[in-house]
Image (cartoon, rainbow, N blue to C red):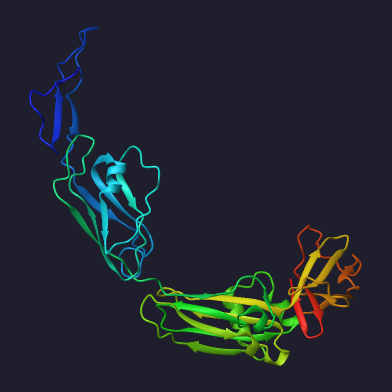
Amino acid sequence: LRLTPQRPLPLATEVRLTVDPSLRGREGPLPMDQRRDVRFRTYGPLVVERLSCNKDTPHGRCAPYDPVGLELSNAVPRRDLQRLVTIEPAVPLSWPKESEGTTRYVTVPATLKPGQSYRITVKAGLRDEYGQSLAKDASLAVEVDDLWPRVELGLEGTSFESAPRARRGRPREVPITAVNTDSYEVVTAPLDEAAIARLSRRGSSEPELFQSATKLPGANVRTVRPSAPANVDAVERVSLDEVLARGKGRGGALVGIRYRPRSGGVRHDVRVVALTDLALTAKVSRFGTLAWVTRLSTGEPVGGATVSVRNTEGREVATVAADGQGLAFLPPEKLQPVEPSGNFASLVLFARSGSDATFH
């Protein structure tokens, strides 16, 4: 049954059609058992209904650097909507190349900086799928929140090349970057092979590692109070040369941080690194272990280097000297790195040459 209004129905209005229970079909005499209502709503004028954003932020405002979304009452051509969206202060908008079809929702591809205020406007003249136009400019304010407190160690991996500054053009430092943080703790310590092995114990949590680090010989624990403005990175630098001053500027070192990222929580990040010119490559198996020691700076083999293995209690369980090509073989009777279960044992492999050392 098709019902056609005699005149246009009003916009944004709920309509209810009622079918009387006396209605019956042509197939038999029985009527409907009860009254039936059919409800629908007519579409409304074209408006920008809301702006949405991620508000998991310190003060419940929009998250910095995250996109914001615009939702409209009716679908509009995607291409037209992208053309008629502006933002102040001006921010580049990187719309996707594919912009066919219609939509009621669009993600505004703008990089909004922390602690700033913006205004996103949809220009008048935008037409929806029913031919209606946006009567006037629709502007919505966007308040961008501050960044969460954060401290990061600028360090990846376990090897820090020890080539001289003059050759590499950079100091042997580990940067620590903090933002919106009142204070944080830094622990540094030189490490011998036994300490490196003990710190590599499986199952150790970051808080346990940090606490253990504070008790190491030569450990230095200090509190840093950044002075940068809100949402601006403050960089503290840890000199590995100073940490390893007694080891002629080479060997193992620990750098750790402890801070509060949000209220009620504490975060730790502890790294163990070798300041070294040695590279250690190994193939490990139950049938024997082959290690190769080379120079990071030149790639040349290090003949006569010492290759050793320690368990996570710090005890040395095997050692062998490399040949003239930097190759060292640990036979299965000297080293069994695979447990009966098939898992690797908790072991640390070291290479030494003079005062230089590295590990895996």
